[in-house]
Length: 261
Image (cartoon, rainbow, N blue to C red; front, side, top):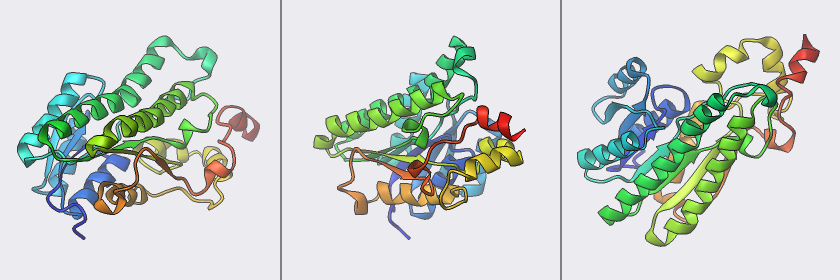
């Protein structure tokens, strides 16, 4: 499959989980990819595993200069920057009344700020090179569904969705598409530890009509499609890949666990 043959791409949060799955799928589709992550060891392992068209770069996405540097390095190395995937992000399960200002700022600096910097500088480079591109922001069902103990994460992901819409509005006329993917429950290194708790797993599966978690490879397949010419009229939308969980409510991670115990 060569849907992205000859394309130059950057994926943040790419050392593991959804980001790594996307980088892998991009390379399989013919692209060359700069993988960005803070975890240098995991990043080195991922790039060695993915071969010659994978380049690792340690990047803190909360630092605007580092994000811009990675995007420009990809452009210089590949000759063009065609696709940017803003995947890096994290959250914390803390009751709103106990959420510290430092934790609030940390979640937003990475989960929202990193996306803003990726869209801003990805678009600038695409405009400068005179070659249209695609920017994909990894959102979450939590952009639409409130979750107990997740005020910082939910607010950040809601902001990601609005950056996607604003970016599409402002950049579409220049041939740059900005789109999003909102995963539901995905088993990744970040979620696996929590899902090892049977009560937590049952809470999540109880609100998913398909009664299973999404696989990271399913998110990656959607990213390949959105980055390709086959999706050339999709702009400004965020596609949910969640097994239908948005048809119900989000699991009660605080009160629900107390009841279960």
